[in-house]
Length: 591
Image (cartoon, rainbow, N blue to C red):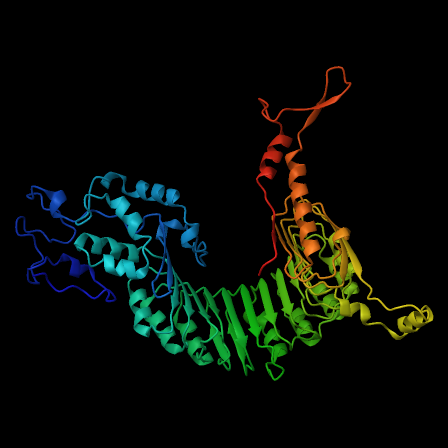
C-alpha cells in the first residue's frame, strides 16, 4: 500500500521527496555508507541509474514555459537565465503565448543545459530522456502539471523543479476559484519576479496579502479586472502594500474607483499605471525613482480630483519622471501651467488626453518648457492648426510620435504641414479630426459670404477635404473616423499600418497609395468600392515590386535589358527586392 500522496494544490517541500515509500520518517542517513541521503549518491549501490530518480534540468535552464489551465487560467513561466537582468530596476522580456513559442529553439536551449545527462531516464518515463520529458511537461496546463506530479517520484521532482524555475506568471482567475487557488499557485514559484492576474471576480485586499506573503522578490505586479468584477482595494491598503514591497518596481492596476486617496512612498517603484480613478481627495507620490506614471480617470462630470495640486508636486517628489500620461476631462490650461512649473528636465513623453480646455496657449507653454519631447499626445483637446505650427517649430528634431485624435479644430492643412515639417515622425494619429460636422461649423462672416453666393436653384453640399502626405519615415498612420475626407494621396515607402476605419466618404477614384512596405489596411465601415480599390492598389504595388528587376545597357549602349533574377552576384537592389517580395498586405474589413 502506497504512502500518503500530497494534494496537488499543496506546496511540497524538499524534505517530502526524501522519504521513501513504506518507511517511517526520521532516518536521513544512508544505510550503507552512513552519509546524509539528501543530494547523496551511495558508492556501494550497484545500479545507481535505476535506483535514483533522473537528474533533471536545473532551475536555471534557459527555457520558456507557457501553459493554460482547464479553468480558463493561463500561466507563462520564464526561467531565470532566459533573461539577462541588469542591476535594478529590471526589465524582463514579455511573456510569450503558447502559439508564439518556438519549439526548436527551446529544445536547443535545454540540450545545452542537460547534455551530459541525456541517457538518464526518470522513474516512470518509459526510458524517455529527461530532456524530452521536460519539454512535454513544460507545455502542460497547470491542472496537467498537478496531475503529472502524482504519477511517480521522478515526475513529481521534475514538475516541482519546473514550478520553481518560473520567473513570470500570467494567471486568469475564474469567478468560481477561491483565494486558496491563487495562494497555492504562487507558493510553488519561489523565484517569481513578475505576476499578472486577470480577475473575473471581485478584488480586495486579500489578494494583496496573498501576493505579499508568497512572492518575497516580486518586482512587477499587474491586476486586471473583467467587465463583471469590481476592484474594492482602498488607497490605504494599496499604499501599505507598496511601502512593504521594497523590491517592487512596476505596478499596474485596473478599476481603481474605490481608492479615495493614497500616499505612495517607495524608493524602488519606477512605473505605475492606475485606471478608472474617481474623485481622489489626495494623491501623493513620494517616489524619487519614478520614471513613468499613467493615470486614467473616469469620464464622469462629477469627478472632483484636483489635478493642478497633484501636478504641481510632481517636480518635488518625482524628479526623474520621463513619461507622463493623464486622461481626464478635468485637464485644463491651469494644469498645463502647473506641469511646466514642475521643471521635469528628463521628460520625453507627454500625454494629456480628453482635456477639451487645452488650447494653443497650452501648446506654447509645453513647447517653452519641454523642447525634447519624443511623444506628444493631445487627443481630445481644442488645439488648432496654429498649435500644430508651434509643435513643428519646436519639436522638429526630436518628435517621433504625434497623436491628435478627436481634435475638431484641426484641418487637413495642419496634418499635411505636420507631416512635412517633422522629418523623424514615425507614428501619427489624426482620428476623428476631419469630420463632416467640422465643415458645417462656419463663422458669421463665412455664413454671410455663403448666402451671397447662393443662387435660388442651388443646393447646399458638405465641403470635403483632401489629404496629401509624403514622408520617408512614417510607419503608422491612423485616420479613423475622418468622414470629411474624400481624397487621400500617400507616398510613404516605410508605412506598414494604415487605419481608414469609418472613412465613409473617401472616394475610390481619389485614393492613391504609394506605400511599398504596407502590411495592413483597416477599412471597417467603408464603402465596398473603396475596399475593392484598396485591394487592387495593394496588389498592384506588390506586383510592381515583383516585376522590378535591375537593368543595364548592352555593350553597344543601344538598349537596356533586365538582369536575370538568378545572377551569380546579386546586387543590392536585388536583395532589397527579395526582401520586399515577402511582404503581403491585408485589407481588414472586420472588427
